[in-house]
Image 1: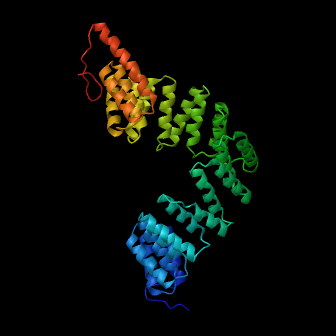
Image 2 (image 1 turned 180 degrees about the vertical axis):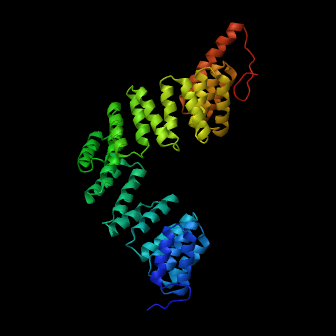
Image 3 (image 1 turned 180 degrees about the horizontal axis):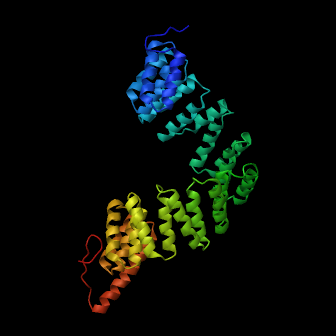
Length: 418
């Protein structure tokens, strides 16, 4: 029978008290109690194991690592001290060390699925092949859904669609009661252009899981791949009904409505999304694009201005507002937005192209030609800059002919005439 220590409860009671404190978000008190339990009862691995996780949570990596290594010495057959040792290295972003530690876990505890998945990930992060680790794991643990999924996903990630199709078909067959195999097989068949097969898998799966958000979303994506915009919009409506917190159902649904010439329906849908998901920038960005596509440039400028203010790290707000303001003739304001975009995203193709358009609108042919030359140099495979450059050359020749000479044009940093 465990002996009690003054101010330290018996092991079972102490662990329970620490768990209660944890549930109350009194994490520091929980940690302090666990460390006292470890000092008082050094023959039990539970307190140091839980304490090490809390130290990791607090980011106190040195203390966590020291405690874990004590645990490894005291309890060499307890898995948690070795898995947490690998996680400390991951937290330090010491990828090579983490890979080595996960290899130790696999050697000592070959039935731990996470050791194969995380070990493969660490190898991949070093630019090395990690799939052999996943294959070994599947051979060792054929009943592990997580390992089979990770192995199939590896092929999807490198866009090897034939291999991905084969692997996801195995997942679907081996674990028929897991929706992920059905969803992912639909997705890779769709990516491979085998849309009829994807639709067939989807319909069979929907017979079992008619309200599954991911399956319904895949239905929308198959319709989109077929160019069936109205059908895609109908699928996204179903997704919204069954996944009210899934904001892409609003944004993608709105784009499908716009593509099916129902832009007037897309606008209220996006405004609804903006209200429901105020911290997400995508509904605002998409609203600006829909308004642009409808030629409502004034409203588009206002919406893109909000994007620019709330999400200044996104180029969409800057470029969108510059474009919309240019289209309504507010060139000075457009130039201000464009100057900030060029400062934030100096090597972005869309920024350079808008600089071309802005200078063109001002009939500042020298600046327009310079921006075209810069774009053609930075993006040699993009023919748009060469096409626009040729057009600008013709316009500059016409302008010179009108006055009988070649005009001297200078330009400021925003593409405006001095």
